[in-house]
Length: 313
Image (cartoon, rainbow, N blue to C red):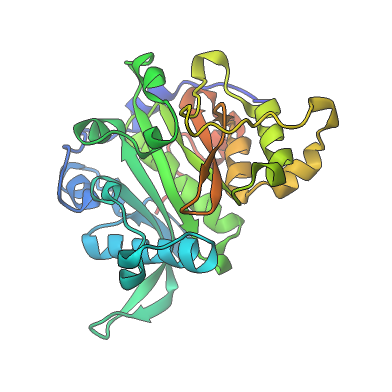
């Protein structure tokens, strides 16, 4: 896979990082802990395009709204299987929510009444972010339940990892503008927290790997991580991605069939892990995405701004 240009993230981070790093938190709304400790208060608004704003959730009420959004997309629109609690609450919840930051896209032109009858801007997109130092204080990364990521982390003791997950956007907002704003927010977060490597599982709808053989084979052939970044699915979950010979692959067909989020990752310069994993609860087949910041496509870094200034509020 072609990747143009390499830049030095450490110089950028030193230049634009806040003067003090947020303290670790537990059992409180994650964004609230960040707000108290970051002098520059950059996270209060990470960017804006017209009425759309990207920022971190400020309290548990906003986290609950993000969970309801995830339920709407994953369970009502897609084919995730809900347990009794999920059905009763209409929220997609797991234990990692309590220790993650929750990035939100908010539409200030779409107002909805809350339980108190007050009009509030609608949350239309969300991303869940888990920093390595927070994961280390608890039960590790969510991704470790599908991929053997610990050897990679141990081999890079000087690097700071960030897990991306639970990404979803309401259907009317699944367009270039919203995706750009989400990525602008992620890039701002990377600079704020001196992140070196992003990782996380991305999903392809469906649980029959033979029906997505073209997509899986294309990812295996064109974006598989180099040996020093390669991570393999857990043995009991491993699904071979190398299903079609390279000379029989139709790259255009594969790209058309891939979900927009994965295509976006590829444009940024992402690698994929070795082996897919079937997630029966969510009705998807997962692939591991790895994005060392030093390997990101310089065209996109320059587009969002080395200091995340493109959509800064």
